[in-house]
Length: 332
Image (cartoon, rainbow, N blue to C red; front, side):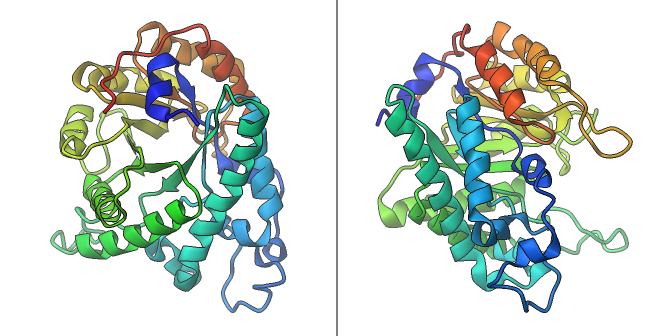
């Protein structure tokens, strides 16, 4: 199979859309989340989307299939909350290895199906590493600004377990995404470097931050340039932004990244901003029209969708980017 680093030189790659948006369509009940295996679990499980890789694996495979069929080159594993830290909400810390391993295995099996059918368009699996629900650089208590709910080392250990399972399950890429606290991301990247060294491997690593509002900063207060500088000491495949904003609002921040890095640049924005009901109204055509600005300006190498995006959005994006060349990158 062709190396993704080589393909990035040739064309703009397409990432999948939102797993959560697709899973909502199934309207899974508490019973569905539990399945047979967890029917007597003493805590509520509805909403634990990562668990569906164990209890509803065919639904997860089907979502991946739909995104690959829509034109995605890369799908993300169903592991956004796949750390002991996030799984503590459901008292499922002991399942973390299995959740990540199975999620990666399901995605890889579907990716291989498509690669076999279209060898000239190999499909890749990105092991999704979410931000956790705790921050290492900010206090959750306004009355005690020095307090931290978690330490760097606790994050590193949790991320390392997730990374090992994602790789064992067949992930081709590791994607540290939706970064709102760069210190959390540094713990994840440190853990990845540890695993790379121990196993003598070099999987490509994607890093994607989140600009949280119109101030143009991450939640921990960094501008796009500061975020880039903070993670530039680690060898990565790409750096970019996802979530929080719609495609239009991301443009100036992508311009900053694109002008200041030799890495590939990625973007997977939301389908616009949420409406009063927390839903996303932007149509595939509207979103593609905005992403056209990215490719006309030569800002991106990898593009996809986050909250509210569907296979229809990915098809519109994939059809659009075919006609454009990727920005130049120095790929190691």
